[in-house]
Image (cartoon, rainbow, N blue to C red; front, side):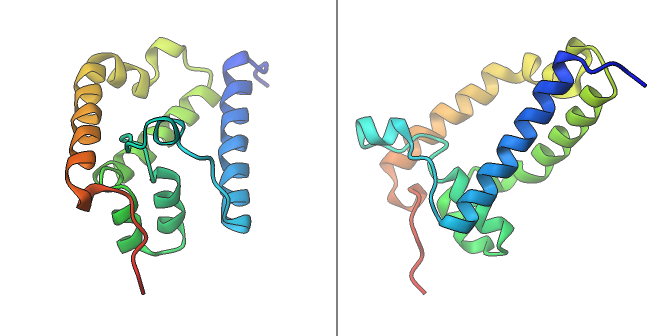
Length: 135
């Protein structure tokens, strides 16, 4: 049996927190407010992300798309990378060899530029802002 490492404890704790937040949000329809939007009135690239994920989990793809357009092209690769990274951490792989860490090290600036560009665009064009669709 492998000893419990700090990496494993952190990975399990993060997973438990994410699942707890998702369950509480789904049951009580209460989410964390965006600090950036609260302070500035502008939408950040992540505004609507939590609501978008909850909409996806409930099968409402159209509403998920309206909450955060950027999530859709990232959902499948992101989930696969996170699952693989979780497995790598649980298997005891060294931090610098985990796939998601290597990808972020190589493409971090590119991802940051996409997020900044999307953040600017969603405040210029109203159709990119997170909205609730009327039924």
